[in-house]
Image 1 (cartoon, helix red, strand yellow):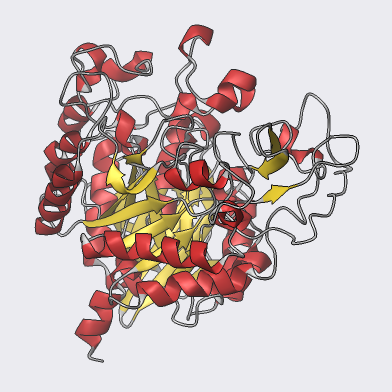
Image 2 (cartoon, one colour):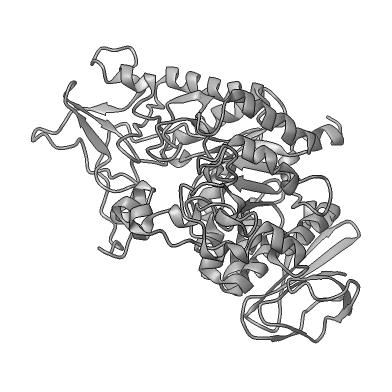
Length: 541
């Protein structure tokens, strides 16, 4: 295979992925809910081929399948159709074509663990004990006292089992009762779900984000799970009451993942990234699940690590060491299930975080609005939509799913009608139009970083090496490819830092500061210089 062809097939190794939550991106039919035509309308903002656009390479769409929306699209009633609130298959075809014309790839959210309880498969399955699709889902008899088959609990709280009065058995649901789990030990289920992937590949989809992948295979003996000794009532997430050693992560998962990868390899140029909350060593195991290297387990570690320079240095060093050069890292700061990065670490340090993920080796994910500095939105009790939030507002996900800020007009230019979730109060300051005019805005920092990254072979494909510095608040590393050598120095504190870097080079040329107030080409002496509070700098050696 030629280098050019290989590069095309593994396009994702140089890609920046932008996650869109379609309900909240752009509404064009004035119903208060975002739609596919809204995404099409904003493709030039994402990448029009010039540095006036964001410059991303692919968009990951949260679910747009037909759905009753009990969990806002993660309860699928038809895998081969678009829900009318987002549009139709013709709109999707147009989105794919328009995106590809701009060199933007399309990644679909794929939900193989469960369907909606309104899916025709489940309606058949629950209709009778002898229905041919009965074994497509996981059914078990009650215990002698009528209680659920075991102590497994739902991610969203409460038992993971619901009793069906008609057939006198319980069905398993790892999430809502409206989301019954498919039985991945049934070969017919496997075949049908593989065909779903093929359906979307034929429509031009370039990759898949696999939802709840770690939940796919369950213990076939349905053993009780042990209590978590670290669990604290009222403080811990209710799901953490148990150690989930039987309800997910079973050995057969490796084979299931490899099955997905074989399907993806039928048309070169596809890949998948699996939702898996794992430590580094477990992540490495699932990199090896695919013999053709088409699967990456999602790295969520940056979301949960305490925001301290040494924590991040130690993590990245270990991640790089365990993965080696043959596996491709990825980094996530936030998504539709996690608090926004600005809310977690503040606006100033979010600029440092942007420089971090866009200069490390690997695939960075940007959650819509991160490039503007969007933060969590307070959701009044009467406006809560997320089923997690309805049960416990502390764990609700609505605050990070609110509408995109396009301008300072009413409803932030997202819609002309009141949106499905409230717009953040700060939209008149943090929005695309106004930040585009501000040369030092978060948006322009993202643009500068992304477009520089596109031109830099060191940042796209170079080696990573961390450096010792004279301050515990500094994370410094260089990226190198052939003769190009880039140095990144990040101040994780709100105090200025005097820095000495142990490196042979005496000085380096400043390319970019997160402050966006330096001119290009300023020379920095590396033996002794000062990094301002909350500052990251990009240097050419």
